[in-house]
Length: 473
Image (cartoon, rainbow, N blue to C red):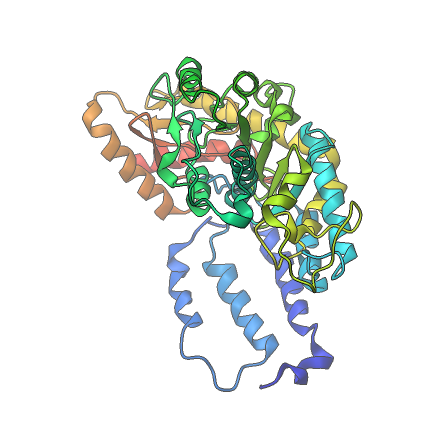
């Protein structure tokens, strides 16, 4: 096979193969190993020199599906707890297929009014879902990291303006270091965003009152006072990945108001706590932030890549990312929005389609029920750990993260980290439940996070059952 024009009349053949593979794959997803290492040898079949004459679309797709359904990590199943990774709801998955089928450019209104309008509606629904004022501006991004880049680029523009500089046009040269303050709960993606923006990964200062990283408000206020009124950025963290701890957003908003600082909220997955009466207090105050970021491929359960960024002042995104001066690019208004001028990407996939599809399909009530189910399952797992003589809960269960370690009676403290590391490696090798280890308060711990729409109490229970079985080997 050579030029794809020869497949013009059979262009849907590869899609038919995907559709036929989907039913048996999805039907068996609950029972599959999350990762079956015995199938890794299939990866070799992806290799070899670039073919001079191709196999044709159906043959290439058939090979990809055959290998992927066996050797892929089934992270869209109910027992992938290792990272904060959701799956894809049925509607979101179908919406993603539609995205590829329609192949809309999501950056310019002139290219696709459809893609632009879907993004505008989806952003409005997300704001409504989380209790963010409708007046906020927003843009979809590939990830929370790029959402941080977006929100912190807006903060950087605001900060530079207060020094009399248009940083988008003139850059950072001659400006002082932008002060960025946070608690010890801050995620590495925030530092990465500062690195990308040229502000410096290690310029962020943390203020903690304990070894869990909880914020020391008095120390942070003293640091802001020492700046003598110079503009600064405060990063509030909603949902730390090891413990589920959160900063007191309202208190940080008060601090920002007193010192004229910009408040940026990292709500990567914790923003979904706003949906449950049990956890809504954790998200209280996000409506007072200057910028808010979150991930879609976590608790929203839409496919990679998906993030979103909201900014209190809608105009500042255009200042930070627009005004390219390219004559061929059209201007925009409130209806004809060019989202490539509101965020870091120029060429953009129409990633709003799966978000629109899943929110339309399940609505506020469906997502609230899912969040409540995950909160129940996490609380149940935490209670099982607390009742167990050989496991120890090392942080209270506050949302969908359960932080614990294996601590059998009689084992000295200085051996526990190695013991838990070895158990974590054995768990990943086993493949039934994926939940490796992390470090929290200097301890090696498990921190399974339950955010997949398929996950139930039974999946959480299986984690402890498998861990116990592995300790007996």
